[in-house]
Image (cartoon, rainbow, N blue to C red):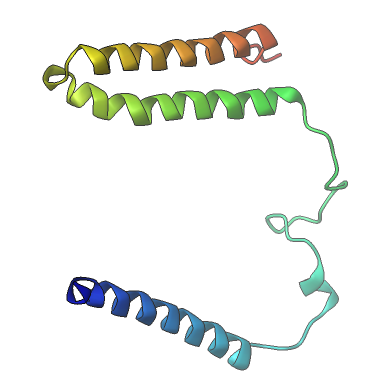
Length: 118
């Protein structure tokens, strides 16, 4: 039984060993001089403006919610659609329940104004 898992165990151990060796070498061989410029925040080469505690409009979060809703929908719907001809009634009812749950998320976002961008 152990022979089956021996190769994957060796591969995992070797991966962790290589990662540890590279981390040790980078800290040992890397530059140690710190300057003020190296310690500042980097924003695409531009001087940072404002504070990190700035409040964002709720529309940004609603866009993120809609992306997650529709992204997850596609991830679960596509494999089901590929095998839809081979499946029976129970998986069809399950996917209808899934679509109804996503429809509730869509209606929630619609009522919150997530699709209105002024």
